Amino acid sequence: EIVMTQSPATLSVSPGERATLSCRASQSVSSDLAWYQQKPGQAPRLLIYGASTRATGIPARFSGSGSGTEFTLTISSLQSEDFAVYYCQQCNNWPPLTFGGGTKVEIK
Amino acid sequence: QVQLVESGGGVVQPGRSLRVSCAASGFTFSSHGMHWVRQAPGKGLEWVAVISYDGSNKYYADSVKGRFTISRDNSKNTMYMQMNSLRAEDTAVYYCAKDGGSGIIEYWGQGTLVTVSS
Image 1 (cartoon, rainbow over the protein chains, first blue to last red):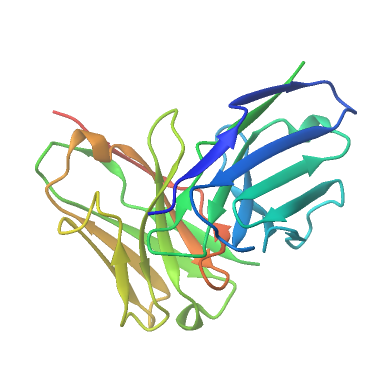
Image 2 (cartoon, rainbow over the protein chains, first blue to last red):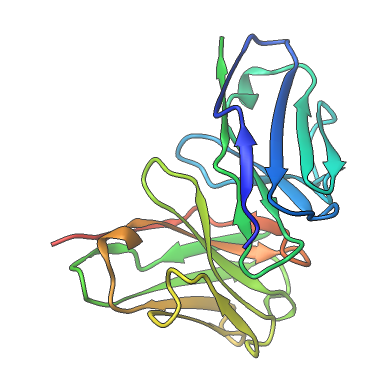
């Protein structure tokens, strides 16, 4: 089973600033990496797939990069609606699909 | 638009059974794999099971293998999860989700809460 590790667990950022979230896989997942956003009381929403492709309707301020074992989600200028928990997930070697533990982006 | 609506959650005693359902609309249900993903209170996401578009292939997380059974009825655009021998650690919100291709979870339902407690 591929283990996904996200860092940091919590990221404190001021509105308008850049946020950089990291995700590491225990073995290579090529570019088979997705990012999801989850707000309190809501279901997750797909943001990025294929490590860098934005899902339908996702604003351009969200970008993904990386391949192999190291991945990054960048939010270029945080808006109030972006404060949430973000999860990475590998879909290279499955089942099982595996998720990282999440990064909570909170208001500084 | 894609809609996934879960139902059937509730409070159940340890060792008992429960079936949750997912009604799908807004897409060709019979053409897509479907997943169950769960989230324990205050915790992260855990993939539970997947079923192929025609129900011929099913895979499970080790944590539920032998206790949970995923199924679907394409004539009713509905997916199910039969959960037997429930344990306290199965307490979670259970999300139904549409596979967008190769394990990408494209759409999620709002979830149904299953609480296992005496």
